[in-house]
Length: 79
Image (tube, rainbow, N blue to C red; front, side, top):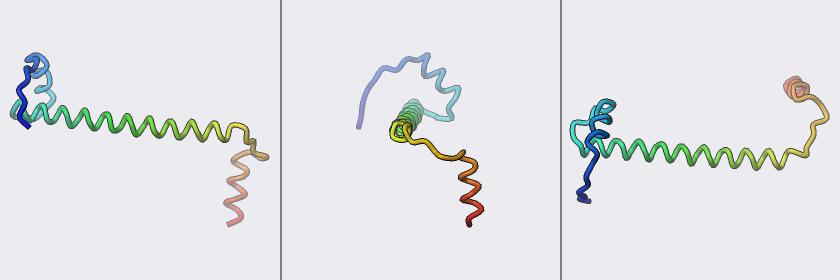
């Protein structure tokens, strides 16, 4: 898709310091790829945190009869 946009020259110069891109197009594509990767990771993290919070709320009322280390030791010794 062909698009004409005006880019901030200062931002382009700053981005080129951190990139090996040879052209403006390659620099913009690299920036878009990095942005997408960052947003995907944010979504994955958010989803994980939501699942973790859900599990914590479900198990908040559950109390173990023994210390966790004791339970793990007993499980290990039973094998």
